[in-house]
Structure formats: structure tokens, C-alpha cells
Image (cartoon, each protein chain N blue to C red):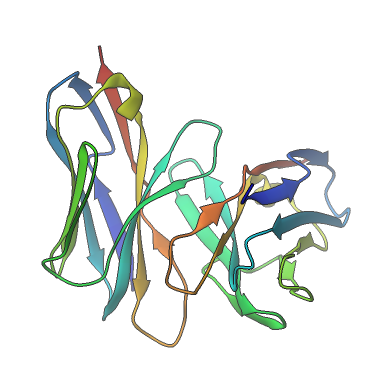
Length: 111
Length: 112
């Protein structure tokens, strides 16, 4: 069964304290892996798409990497405004275009 | 402004009373999808549509119907809602089936 597991469930960081969020997945073949950010009471907001192992993408303090079994979202010198829930989703390289989301990592950055 | 809109934003209804949640996008996107979000279970896909008149099941389609008669609209229909369909619902669209999705603001549904 296709699965997406995110860890940790919750993370508290001091402002400036870098860390990484993990997304591990089991699909028979990966079409794409997606990272989203969700603020309380709002819809998810797209961050990155990764398509193949070894690929990396960066945006401000965020960097996403991909291996054959997992993806990491690295947060460098986070600020309080980075506090949010970060969601990972995968799409299998099959005939369907279904998405499977993980349950997310709730990040709190303290000033 | 490019956006996905959903209506209503909040809805309280009773078991068995048919309801429709509308979703509309103004970006000429091919792909549209419905999700429900529940604590501890995350976002789960209900149905998706690759184009007009083309729909397919996600992971949790039971109890829901969809239709895609126009490219911009993708309504979610609950023919006979039950309390286990109480949830936060999101509509999303993307230019193509494997691209970044734009999410609507959500519809909080309570079925009593």
C-alpha cells in the first residue's frame, strides 16, 4: 500500500536554529513529490516539486531534497513567520493522478 | 486575481439532507480535485478531474459525487450526508495533473 510518513509530528525551534523535516514514502514508482505549507485556517500553499532522486530546490530559508525513499525539507535560520504545518505529498508514476499526503509536521519557531 | 473559490465556507446540516459545495477556478486549469482534512488523518483525496467530463476516484470517494461539466467548476455533492462526513473540505486546481496545486480557502462542514 502506498504510504507517506512525515516526521517529526511537531517541532519547536528557536529563531535561527536550523533543522530538517522528513518525508518518507513507499510507492512503486514516483511521478513527483510535493511540499506545501499550511497556515491555521487556510488552504495549503505550494512550495516545491521534486521529480527525481538527487534533485534539490531552494526558496529563501527552505531547501528541499529528494532520495529514492525520502525527502527532506531543510530550514536554515528560521524566523517566527516560518511557523506553520508543512505537508508532503506524492504522486505515483502509474496511470492515475492521485495524490497521497502525509499528516504533516507542525513547526513552531520561537522569537 | 488567480484564485480558487469555494462556497459555502461554513455549513451546518442534518443527516440525509442533500448538499452541494461549489468550487470554481479562474486559471483555466485542467486538473481539479477535492480533499477532506481531518485531525490525525491529514489531507485525503476524494475525487479528481483531469478535464471536462473526466473524473476519477481518490482514496476516500464513498458517500460523495462530483461532476465536471465546465472547465472552471467542480462541485462536490453529498447526496445523503452522515456525521462521519463532518470535516474540513478543500478544493484545488492545477494546470496539469502532476503540477503544483492551488487550494481554495476551505469549507467547514458539520453534519448533525
